[in-house]
Length: 325
Image (tube, rainbow, N blue to C red):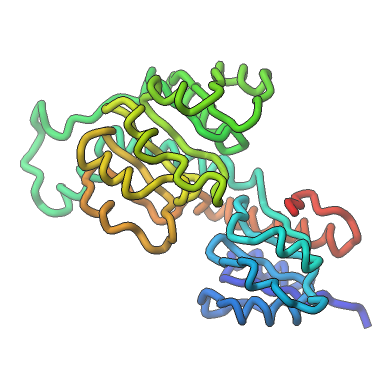
């Protein structure tokens, strides 16, 4: 009898992806779409050949510690970010980790531009006013925002999503693009959007009208944008975060929004989500979205099929194309 691999999907995935996976493997689905706990994960690692987590699945060292030769040998992460997985602990347990780059770059960049436009043109404030029945009609000084066209965009983290954001800003709005990246960016890539790379945030921040974050999360970048960085920005500047919530110091940003240190912010991610610091709810100049970066049917299906490609390659004895650890 053919050895059918046993695969666990930790959350509900798009129907087309679940159907395709189920035709190839013995798949355990999370029909109730409820988060799993440490005990659930440890059991899954001992009873499945592959486990496919998402960004909401916190797989710290306690998930892997002391496991004796787990059956699971690969984590097919559904998403590009993987700081929710302790990759070192996974590797020490003999488990490979993969992710899903490329397929969500365009849609996440779209959300970054959505947040820029909403924050710049005060769209969230305007919709709330209209829905509350408080709009009294057009007038010259009503809810005046600022332009994006021709302004300067600073991008922190110039990977695939950062580059897609730069293209939209440059060719859609004629924006000047500045980049701060942890390593030198290929001059050819910079040239595509006439981008200028800065060696440090401190050098770049005073020049930007918009700052868009696309760097990895995790402890290395926790609080990357805090009081010092916000004070270095223009009072008219707008901060956008579609990276990871922990990259921004919540208390520092809330203070900056309430005191006018910066003009506005657009956030699609939050530290400790789905919990959101309640201070943001009092900031009329904050646009808040529930982690919609990759939330299109095409992208969410593409992410699932990318996981499947990595599983197939791993089970065929190949190195998965998206191996990260």
